[in-house]
Image (tube, rainbow, N blue to C red; front, side, top):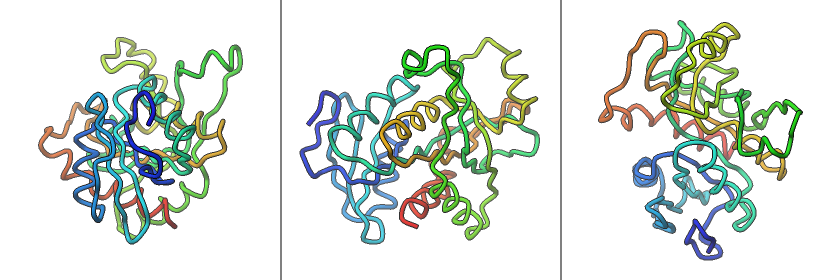
Length: 234
């Protein structure tokens, strides 16, 4: 048990999926895991452990933004021995060829700042995904014929962004989508010698203004979860 995770020793698997929304954690656990057990509900941030094709898996909500995710990932690695951490979440599309409901597998995560910024000081550290996970996720997406894009994403500090000039530069430099967590996840995983990946579903689009209604988001996220699980155990 930690400050933010109430699971007992042995109740967290070495493989952890990290949706931001705790209710999405519950949906994913009920939909994809065998015999899911609620192992955390501290502050309403639900976590479940079960099995997928016989493999132990924990699905733990991580909240919104890098500071929140940083808390959970630090405790999962330090106190529970998590070794593979895969973010499953939504993102906003930033390129014309990226469509609503497409999946993005994030190779790199650009950011203005992260909770780890104080460590690096003047250094512009480049957080990247684990290659074995990324390669397996792309193979899993191709096997499912899921429209998938591989490349860089932007982890923003804010949801209500008032920097259109910054977004323009992200688009100009080929960034596929924007979300709020992956850069810190990748940084922490690299620091502690763990594997990490972000597999994201495009739920809205910054260029076209399209957006999935909230009641359709969960139904559209099934491919993303299956890709993440397949990659974790490839």
